[in-house]
Image (cartoon, rainbow, N blue to C red; front, side, top):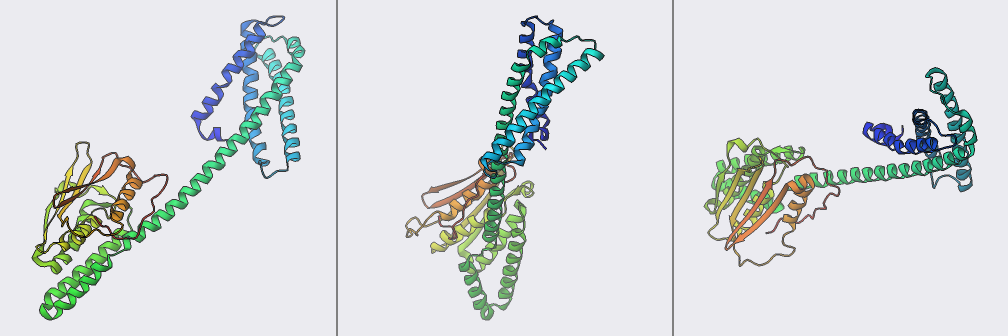
Length: 371
């Protein structure tokens, strides 16, 4: 099928482009020798323009049958010369047939002798137009090939992105798992009941992580359940050093978000904030609606500004920015603020945020998320 037939708007635009061609024909006939009456000139010009327009489209199929780069130059030239010649002859023949039919059945008299005298100029004009049709045909094929290659490349990148995201979703901080197992081991003798409870929390955390790992979207409520599950495990390890302050309206728990947006920020707050302070501190989790119907999410924690600078700082935050940009484009963003000994990461998602179709998926680093 010709690309123009796949879209009605494109087909109408294409046919509209032949109006100037028809008008030029009519103008030449009205000012010819002998001059044609305006009505006859308009009828005949519209007729030959319509015939030429559809023959023009047919050359696309010839171009598809003999693609550039896959056909020998001599064969390609001969084939297209024959195609142009046949199209020109068919156009002239159909023009005369249609003119005779209109003259007989519609009562519009055409000056056939004038058409016969203009046979050579009409034939030359037809050759030029149909040669242009060949060029347009190959141009359309080149555009289709390019679009197909871009689509295939995008699909491959999407597959790579999905595999990368699944890998990211399935990653559990080894230190977190190691520390949790050590805490459970210590509690088995000191407090067996608490050790059992921590085992159940850890198992529940893994289950929820796996469940979210198979989703393209989740709700804020599900994300918070995972986060609070994680924090319960860490509170068993840190004791009173870790406190949590949460302010999330129930009306926002059904807001759809990309999975694992808050989880990395909370892990970051524990690992690079609370863990570095002898007295510990409070992690604040906030969610509030935006004026446009979107949502604002923030995670705030104390941290030691004098702690040693870790190598490759900020990799995790850049990963999160890349995920947001890929999923939402300009409709979501991550802001990071440091005020004295407080660190705040805030995510804002506008109500216009749509499905992920960014042209180039990001490549994630595999390091943890330092501040």
